[in-house]
Image (cartoon, rainbow over all chains, first blue to last red; front, side, top):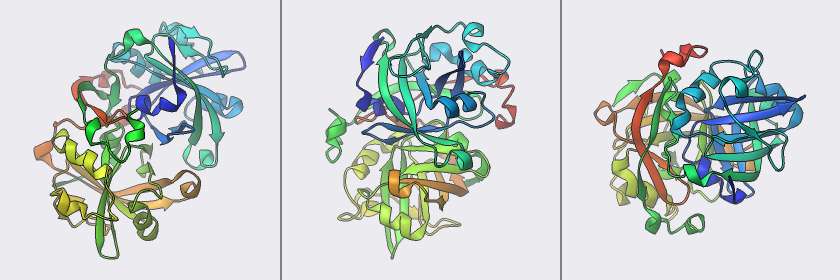
Length: 183
Length: 183
């Protein structure tokens, strides 16, 4: 994996891929699937994420204030769904799903080697965590695997079906007001 | 346009399409492009949206507490980018971009006839509006145009390039824990 400029993570998350989220708490790593997330701010890079008490990762995130958002390609589709349909309370998901953890640089939560991108995050605001399970995260370091670049990511249609990335169109010439985001 | 069950709007937004947002304030309709949004809760359906003071729509949204989130297909790609690169302060965007407004059912903000889906929304929480320009919206009514069903939506890669929806994969059989969302 190569380091990816942390102030460019919006390029990875704004398209809305389904992601995995890892945590590490009291010596136990866990990973969950997350479909409800968004970029909140370009710089410093803030991310909104919905992680609730129904997720075993919720306690780890609240207690440690750290996680990694990992972006899988479609090659991991079945695992992504299965990870979201069992609980870390009963399952060692890294072992069960054959995922390879790797130490992160700034957080205790692990990177996932099989994913295209990994974004190390720290919780910076829990104001709406009790009401909506909404955490504001700051991306503090990011990584991509250049070997997986261009592989399709998955967009969850909410019901167990996913649209994969298809054709890419380039309209950068028309992006005049916001041209700083092209560079 | 046909009415779409408002408690199923997560199926439209969870995939992360770039969207248009309409407002109506003091007799003026406006439309903007939005890439930073997420589902917050399935039911009642809550949506997080980042709309800031740099957006002319910001004042309208704050004052009226209402908007419509419209989901364009790739047929509108150039217009979607151009709408995001000019301001309603200087431009009648509906006229300039040849969009057809249509009255909504529950809000003053208009629907956009050319879009695949339209979601009527009311602001329900502004707690983080000052700090992060983050509005929590509740979807109160939704519409889709069946003629446009299956047309690709656009996922903004943050830099003026977009990935269009490609192949759809169905993994509903594996969605066992969350099977209520398949139905």
